[in-house]
Image (cartoon, rainbow, N blue to C red; front, top):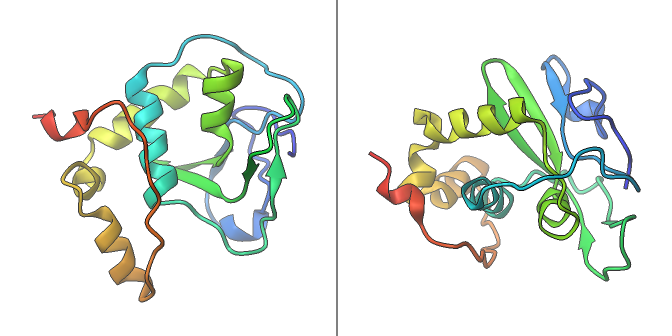
Length: 157
């Protein structure tokens, strides 16, 4: 996996982000820059985004974790767009958080929550985002099984 410093404007696939202000988070390589606990709500949001809004242009390649000898392969990115910034995360970020206790920067966690609470995520909170993404793309999406603690977002007022 490529190592990119957290909050850097460097990205793995620059062609996908032309004309957009980007900020990379979670591209660890073989080191964990910050450790700590991450709330289950943040993990659940990331699992949802990876399952239903995963970005893969087909050329991003397969990656394995450079921190452990897991057989799991990762590919693609997760994008979170808040206030004109596109946070670009590797799909491996959930593995890094759960298995290696990686703690993303607080500014990203705060913006992730802000994104989730915004109207942009209303379709996620009511469970129709996969249908909307399918309509936008014109092609069927593969349904992924997502294990989350609970559907807590449906209870937000």
